[in-house]
Length: 115
Length: 115
DNA sequence: ACTTACAGTAAGTCATGGCTAACGCAGTCA
DNA sequence: TGACTGCGTTAGCCATGACTTACTGTAAGT
Image 1 (cartoon, rainbow over the protein chains, first blue to last red):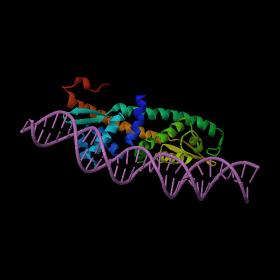
Image 2: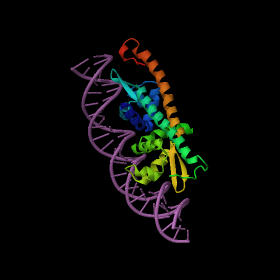
Image 3: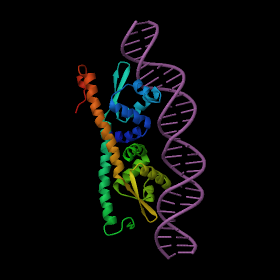
Image 4: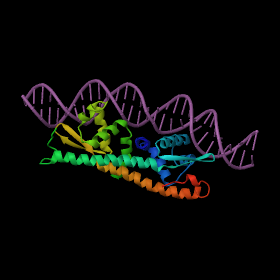
């Protein structure tokens, strides 16, 4: 259940361009909030809020280091999203075959409609 | 280019709950617009708009069948999203190791990344 | 203890986009 | 050919959320 929720929230989290930029920077190296904000066109509180969303989606984790908080990617959230896509992909492939069998078995592609 | 764009737009497309519901129904079986709308709490035009977003994201394809349009999942868009996640996951794993070496080599043995 | 630096929270503004209602268009059947 | 059906499009309303400024809290250095 936690996996499914993470996957779902993960899509919303990565839908925002700023959060994707943060995500990509963190994939290269862990970083603190101020450090991330200096390389982005938004304010530090904005970065802080985005990191909160990413953390709740299970995509990043937080480590306190003095007054700083070092953020890094959480492979669990990424894995949950991969699993979600894989599951639907597999289901879709089966549906493709079944649909193709019923629809194109004898003749016309795209013209026949058998309810 | 199409792949990268598809992956990026795919996250925004799947961020919406209604679009995820449409996506999941299409993974089970291809369907027309009205058929999808009857099983959802939104109007038919809303479903039509969502399908347009999903199509532009490369997640679904369209087949004309008389007055109907049969929609089904497009494995290419799903694959693009998987690839995007895989690439960042791999980069992140490398960053984890490098960061762990520098940061926790002598202080926090219990916090080291398992697996 | 005081100061400085770093980060999260609160309040408010504004843009994005999801939704419905109304309309137009194409294909099917009598 | 005329009426009906199934979809897509447009316009407009409204909710969500992304952003900034100002404030508070906490840890480290002097």
